[in-house]
Image (cartoon, rainbow, N blue to C red; front, side):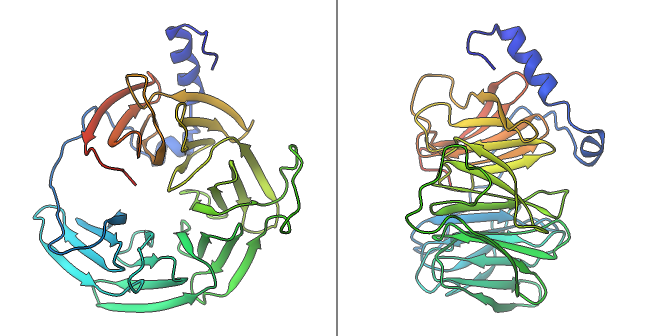
Length: 324
């Protein structure tokens, strides 16, 4: 969207761009919420060296948090009471990624020690299912819980069978020291990766992003890059996908929050995450609904709720801390 466009034309283009497939719209509720309400403030009862990851359970009112000391703690978000404490998940290293299996209370926890653990808080089990020679940044599971994706310090994306934990595919970057041409989009990443994410509908589509300023979209059944979008420099869980549209959060001074069309690999819009001119430097973003997104970072030190059609901040939750 041109910066010279009028407000009306920008809104018209955004509205048109967000005309999602009927199949997707049928599976997602379009929320009319315009406010963020602070329901509960949960404060750990001991020193945890910071919160590095968190996930809400898809089947209960539990919040799972991964700490800098390597522990994982589960709270009831209604009462604020502790449900469970799982110690030494990453052995004094940060728990950088938590991910629930779809429609299940069972979740994966991982970190820079190269271990992926499968934790069932109902049965009280805690099993190490993967050991890799990689500082893990992020894991994700696909729509039917059959594949597990893993990324980290290496520029490669690993796909595992989620029942046997054997490697199914590895999306590799170029050999060390080999420079890429500007138009060489058909190969993998060249630097550390911070996030991988499966399409919530298509179980074979997985995305990855990190320091090399590209977002790659892969098909797990092949070794091919389906789509490569140049520009976003992602330093956290800063990508999400909804239909044909990709949301990215970059560690940029400005224009850090962007919406892309994966069919054309073109930018749809730079989304406003601040009402005033100031540094943004985002770490994370995700779709809240088809027309609203959430984001946060180290420049934007609040959780922001943004309307993608009107391209404006609807509300914010003040933290004055880095939002990861």
